[in-house]
Image (cartoon, rainbow, N blue to C red; front, side):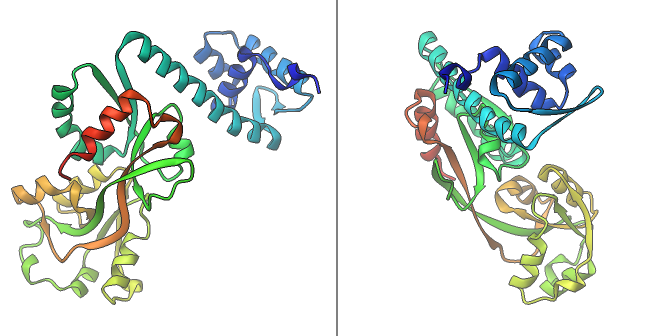
Length: 297
């Protein structure tokens, strides 16, 4: 097979990847500073070179074909590696260590960011760009354009090096003003209250009920929230009670804004610093990793 067919030009690949990601030639054109017709022509040229239909077209609407979806998945990862390699090269050239780090939003704001002043004081020549990711379950997606992630799980991610930071403990918390008799509550009393949750952990309360020998059919599910910080605010406002990682409510517990009702439950997960093996010698990552692992979690 002609090698040229297997190595399309970068301009064709970028046009296709942007159009596939946005589901629109117009939005891809805006991102790439091209005209809509130019993006369309580049995608057509790529399809002609590959002799494969990548999009189904219906007027102005486009939709990836199954083949196009597979190509986009593989291409996005490849482009991410190219961008990361470029970033490393630029960092070496400028003698400035730059790290792109993905973090769960509430964990980042409540645990990591308060400590970053120490990192910069110790390592003034390095820069850590922190990006929020609500869900980090699929590291191959979350790690796009990232050098490393702080995430929760079992640490078993093929192709990634993972360093444990802390075991996740879940606490049932409530507003003391909303539950003045909280000290006398028993686990079975939870069934009388609205149970708040985050959408990324739909089974947390079921696991807690099972852990305490309670029938989960008597649960009273309350509102759910996309971000854990909103969940914590809702509890403090007296909307209901919630099951949250203890590391995220240390300040509220210390100030008496929230109270812990029962003994903590091990969630079965831990927090990790994880990164693709190819980045293990990236200078900025080495410095950040060594600093982070030396912290008292």
